[in-house]
Image (tube, rainbow, N blue to C red):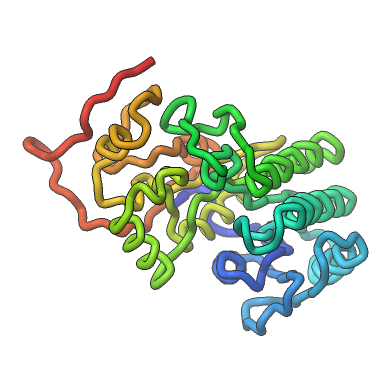
Length: 316
């Protein structure tokens, strides 16, 4: 967790899109508990929650609906207060709607929300991007990363509309910063879960690690994802930033070195990877946001002399 920016400033309001979803529920509750006045917006009705100051419903690709959501949020923002935006609304995976709708909804909702935020001189925008923005997770073919662990500068390999929608959403955020001067942070999340959802994913990966190879066995606890959003809102930043936010380990029981030898034997390794170390580099999150995940799923392994270590791998 972060240690330097633990609460919101006085009179700070946040508009959270996608508030009816699982991550939206966790984020709105966490932000309310740490000092924000929270307004939830979604295309679906937002269930009543005591921590929400107000809600708005409408198509977030529709400028009129987005303007109405901002009006609702600004009504709850004092004249000397700040308004932030957290954009979580999206089609969360391929196959829910056709690929054209996936691209349209994800890209246009991000663009529409971000531009209205810029026009309203919003203090900061935090958006949910995806580890799939690299292009591996939902590709119709096996591809090897250019190097591991993957950082935010890894080349774009996207050949699927979902990955493309996240790349374009990141570009929309960068455009918003250039156009309006608004600080934007796009968080590249992997699979997010807790409770039964996380338990089901861990069981799937344990049963068939190969099936999760394109996601690189990455994961993040829901509570850590909510904390990453809060950290992105409060970190002392300006400009536009894309930031990986993944757990420091994998969702696999097998050591990471074994996974690499089985599935990515030719990929260059640029930095040391621990026995169960993540294949996503989240050091930018630590450096810029002062964010480190604090929720895990493993039984701690022994440390000190004789403790197991990751197999050695070659460097480029």
